Image (cartoon, rainbow, N blue to C red; front, side):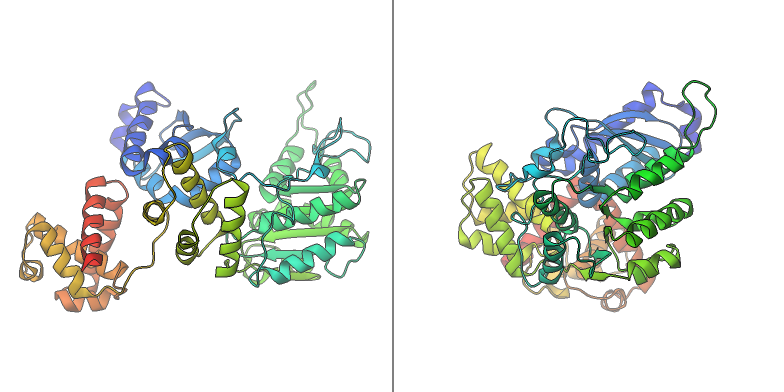
Length: 482
């Protein structure tokens, strides 16, 4: 944190809290009105000290979307407004009109099997009849709503086999891994839902590794509400989890470095496995890449079946888009579907976000869904595949936009306008022409370090300077028009 700022503004003072309004101004300036309204208006600044900013947001899903789509913009803005030493933390609240719910697709096959019976709980410290447990499963995450293709065929087939006969322990544990947004959470919950549909009495529980860690910490640090003395509930915690028939833990990599939690989970894992109970785990990496996880746990993760979910292939992307459009009553022309599927290639979550934006334009703004709208929506979310761009095209476009000659860009002058244009050439040559820093430096007669500095400077400014972003958009449009 800037020493001068910390000496002037006290902890959680009105002045410091007001700095969040300045952050919102930057967000508003760099995002479309729809994006800002959906993802930043619901945020409330709770407190701010010299070292930590606490924001209240609707839900963990909301946080996941912020980190996945706006981490760079948020990070750069906080550094600019609060200084480099600020730490960002979240707390959650639930509201009736929760944006995290609004952006989810309306599924046509929700499952009623996971609705908890009266008195059911997922609290490991609450005494309850053995049969009453809230599985914490999302009823929309069914196999019927899970699109399939060759990119997820193996994992899906194994999941369905477990769900059809959980007594068969060939795939115990099932360890599903893959990058974020490829459908891991949906798949592992679909297994739990199918089991509940076929055997309602089965004690199925879905929990994230973060929640498991939080519950473990609460058990260890619990104090008697009457005596206010430490009174560990770790035995109750372990007993609850050892009573589960099908334990589904999401994002197990979040236990990395948590030795106490890992040790407790090891004993729970052993008990469940030895008693023929099913374990289903998901991670963003395979067991061999989980540095910081105890070896005895890693060896057990490999006991059963390790299944990988790849990035969605074209077939899966088209299937997802058609399903999302049908579920929301949205008519999307085939050429638009093909355009989206060809350019949004990384995650299913990105496809959902694109359809949400198209739906908003079609219903709220009464805009026809066509290629122009799709291009505009994708431009705010992903990098659309473009024609091959070379160094000469970049140089000519930058020169024309700023009213200078290419020779001035190559010259050894440090005038601000020339220097900025030169750094933009470096940045665009690296990003759009795919050139190495050394190759760019050779063309501009500059060192590798100079090019690296120029690219980094543009990246930092680009995240919070709308004018610069507008300039780059116009330059890129000029290149593509040629």
